[in-house]
Image (cartoon, rainbow, N blue to C red; front, side, top):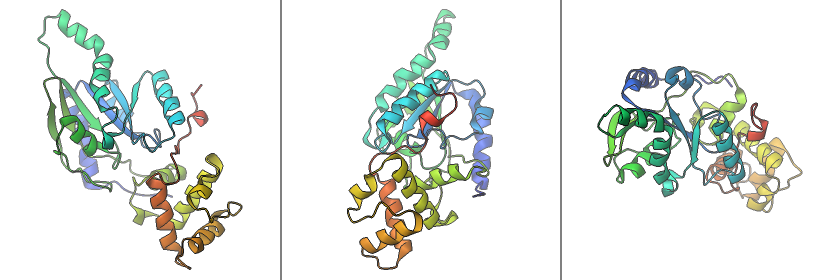
Length: 282
């Protein structure tokens, strides 16, 4: 898979991030808790350099809780504070500001020693499309001020939002890298809805998802589709599920249903990026 997806507004967003970075104290990097590495933009390290950051693992309600804990430990070992949240249900959101103060403790202490008047922390929220930035902004501000959508690329502009007197947030459009050299990263992103479905073959994506569950969460396919024959693999399993779902030979419809079920957590909570398989994890 070599998906080219770098529209003009995303190139512009990259420039805006670089330009606005000097105005913020800290960056909130929002990722999907189901793929904490694959949903990171590899360009960010280059853009952010040494700017303090906090990793926010959103949609934690859909992710494997054991894996989420391991990923938080992993980022901590990298010197990056991390927090699991569920912006949709406002879970963990109130912990963001205290964690930001912790990350900026040295700066706050320096400013106080210099006699500077305390001011609100200025933060930038950044992440690839469809990780829940707009939902998080709405939760932080306490009202629907940012547009949300169930598809990538809803946020187009850039705006400052205030959270009381302690936090000012700079929203930024989602940025995706120019192409996926790693086919598996593309599949992971697609399976969680970060990539438009029109950009790949649904049957390939469905096979990838079913194979993943068969390997890491055995029994979950059968738990969701009681009629499923778990001894089957790939296309044969799709054919079996299509028949069991009552779709006759409408395999595309069956694939859409299975992918939807995976994305909605109807096959159970799961994490596509496995912490124990990443170099540097102990």
